[in-house]
Length: 169
Image (cartoon, rainbow, N blue to C red; front, side, top):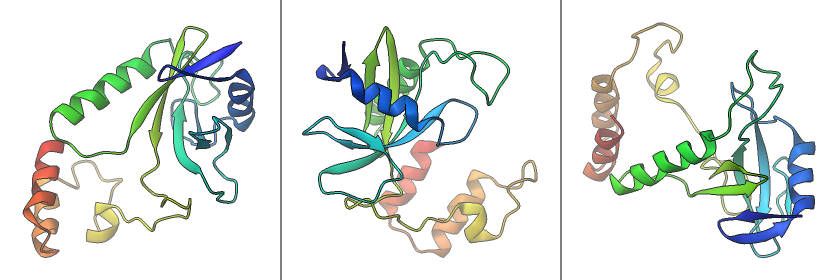
């Protein structure tokens, strides 16, 4: 059995490896953090030590039965829907990490390259808007786009960054 990654065949063993990794990404939908070598098509746990040729991705499983994070099963099709949103975002000029579909057995698992890793797989330090501005993310309505733009102004970010924020609204 072979599976497809954007029309490229890779060995079914890769899918078995992904499933062994499990739901290491957390959240409501089943997902895994993976390391992928596009040249060799090898897929490993994304928690491995950085190796040359690997890039780091978040893989969201499509059509998962018995998802332990929620009571209901995830129907098939969410991977394609999320990929369609990615294509729409690109058309709108929104800059984001590269995304792909991993197709197998009639399912399309959504992959997005991790923005919090450099090309060597090392973690990039990140801070959220709430963390930077000391907003309480748990308080409903605690933040707004206006506040996000105010933080952009205080940081004296270039106009291109402000346009990216506007496109995301």
